[in-house]
Amino acid sequence: MAAEARRGEPDLAGASLEGPAGGGAVEQYGVNASAGGPARAGDVPASVVEILKATRSWVKFLSILGFIGCGLLVVAGLVLGAAGSLSDYMGVAGGFLSLLYLAIAVLYLFPALYLFRYAKAIDGLVASSSLPSLEDALEQQRKFWRFVGILAIVMIGLYVLIMIGALLAAVIAA
Image (tube, rainbow, N blue to C red):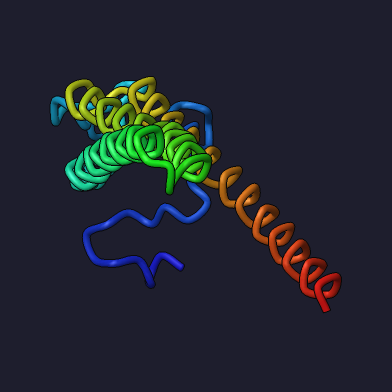
C-alpha cells in the first residue's frame, strides 16, 4: 500500500490522530505544522490545514449565498403577505404563501449559519494549527451535515405523503 502512495505524501492508511503509541500523528512525521520545527502533541499537519484553508472561501461563499437566499425569502414572504392583505383575489392563499416563504427562510437559515461557523472555525485552525481548532471545525461541519441530512429525510417523507394524498384524491374523485 505504501508503494501506491503519491510521491511526497505520507501513507495515511489506517493512521489516526492518536498514532500507534498514543503520541499523535504529527510526531510520527516529526514536523511541527505551525513552526516547522520538531512536532508537539496537538499540532495539525500543515497539509491538513492547507486543505481546509482551500475550502474556507467556498464554505464562506455558500454561507453568504444562504443568508442572501434567506433574506430574499423573507422579503418575498412579506410582499406576498402585504399583497394578500390588500387584494381580495389572493386572500388566504397569499397569507399561506407568506407563512410558507417565512418558514422556508427559517429552515435555510440554519445550514447557512452552520457553514458560516465552519468557515470561522477554519480561520481559527489556520491561526493556531491546534487539534482543538480542528475538532471545532469538524464539529461545525458535522452540525451542518446532520441538519441537512435530517431535512432531507423530512422532505422525502413529506413528498411520499403528498404523493399518497394525491393518489387518494384521484381515486376518490374518480
